[in-house]
Image (cartoon, rainbow, N blue to C red; front, side, top):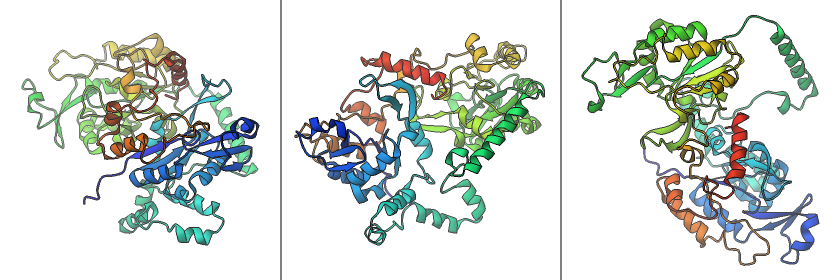
Length: 508
């Protein structure tokens, strides 16, 4: 059924884009230009010309989320003043807590912390079930309304919206419990931080002390964790229609849906070697139904010894395509997901986990020195000995198994293809995808500011974007506003050092 093209998503800032907030101590210099539109706490608020019209324009053509680097209490009040009842149409409202604190100060203001807005968090978190999504935005609007009855009457909850659509799917499900488990409408977590109870906090503290005490007991060295890719590392899969790629020199070892599966030499011996010395998980960026036949082919009954088998569903889809092949989407494998979810034999951290993949970009978002990248398997290479238990890779892993710390070992003993860091020739492609534009900041003294005018350049640009096939291609071909900070930017040296620091701390 064709329901028409999905709307693209705009993620907008508030301060200096939609409005200007000034502290009371600044107001003497500002009031000579114009009077404030609102006042809250210690701030005077000045709306940017056409801000209401601009928001209506955007909401008609896009899904819109607000992401401010201000604290939550300041965001809510400013939004209520700036867009009023339009707020319940926003997809999400995020504040400072969702930003990544670099630990540095901005170049133009030494008192202002340098906070990053990482779109990967949006790609991960904003979907059906986001607790800051449609339903919660609506309820926030209800909570803020002076007259609830009037608010609900003027803003009826959309029967075609997220909650109602979800309930229809629940009604149609054969197994409600399984459906809700696989498709949660809202996510939550329990910790001392999000509990209002002092008793809860003390209980968690007691639990942490007990865990710390048990950690001191010596049960012998724990095995480190290897997270291993499947295709082009352990096997090579060729689509049955890619006739030119199918070799005549040897038969395939198995069939997986539409794929011929070719085992890499020594793969069984390699897996036995790894399982003897490490905890092992398989993480492929293929779809789930394509993984099992390949695994059964190469390791058979050893599959039961794997700690986990993950597929494309656990990867982060960047929304972009790989540099070497335009039809291949870029999937990232974030080790933090492994550390959060895999408990058996753990806890696992950057100090005891190694990702082995043939594609360096898969590890782009991970802490440094937590992955190695052997060469990909080419079927025509009859002399491939990469997985030979007596070869270089297994010799390397033998050393890793006995090392104190994975990151230190990998740093001191580089192996295979280089990781994608700021010195890599592909750094710009993978680190700065074109998904952001930077209109000029709002200056109150500019009485002729028409940046948000629905008939102005920005809205004309967004009109084109709404109809474009691909955001990245459109932005690349149609630059707008201030330049992004890439290696050619005059401030690159200042901000690239921040990026490197974040990577060391495990944020990127």
